[in-house]
Image (cartoon, rainbow, N blue to C red; front, side, top):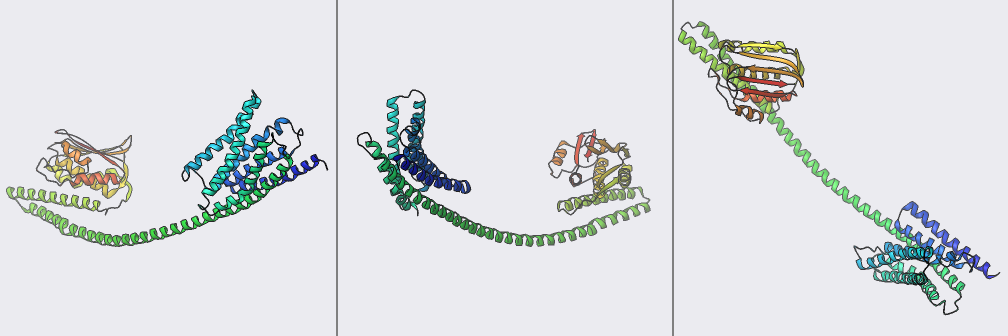
Length: 485
């Protein structure tokens, strides 16, 4: 068997070995997506190309491939070793800044040298630059080997598997020393190239086997560490969830206790309002009826005037108590909506009838301007709203004036209006109404008194039914309340 056959067999064997390792770890990387496997693939494929070319006899391959291509593949392999070592030994700028900077310099150099080398070959082909780049590549490769050894020794005990890196790297170190030393002395001494390649190939094959085992154990260690971290995290989260659950349980019990207290308070509140309605508003109303009966029996004009004044005073007090009860009950959320289509004209007539006597005393006419016949609203609230506004309108009207109750379709929906032409409201009243403050009371044109709560309950009830209350008022010209629904 001639030398070519031997070399061809060697190329086939080592190419097959390197190729199997490369394909196996490439598939592993594509499945597991771990960077250390990718870096290891770069090493293996770089070695495969490098040793395949150098084992071919001289002249078998084109010169540019056999002589010039080896520098590129050597730098690819060096670049892969640098990445692999940094990843395996967990070297980065955060924990080992000086070592990390050294690796960064060598990585950039191993990429830059082949680029300049190829550009020089394709353009000017400067001889001295070519020789300098070849020498620089050999120096960078040797420095990379030394840096890897230094890092392995420096970080020997830092992590569990770091010491095994140094052991597994020994065949590669020996191969690098033999190969690079032979490269330096090849021009001065007759070196058996094929023997050097054979020894280096066997050492690298051994190193690949050791590194493959090492990567496998390293990966399992990483997986176990991740699993342990995940278990600890899950335990921590379980404790936090349990703690939060206990807090929520305590908060729930506290809330339930407060709800029971609130129910007791609401029950007491309802009893209180029932008492107020029965023991305050009821007797006042009965007294008013009694005064009215007595008034019909009195013939003396002076006594009649006194009884009339007394009745007006009682009516004012009844209206005041009603307004206070309505407003307070609403503040305690005791009122619930019961909206339905209401006949506006019938409600206008019903409320107007209630104020027929007080309007007649001032010769005030209640007029209706109805364009929209129905309104979807809580009927009881609507009546309270109208009672308050009509009461105010009559209160601040002078003799022989009109109060207009209107309904029409506006641009934003249905508009309900109550307009008088009396003394008007002061600006401060209107501002207080908008700010939800209790308005100051003002005496009516005949000395009628009020609480100011009527306007507040009106505004609240309008908004509870999805409407808005607007007021325009000019002193001595009147007031116009408009509700938009």
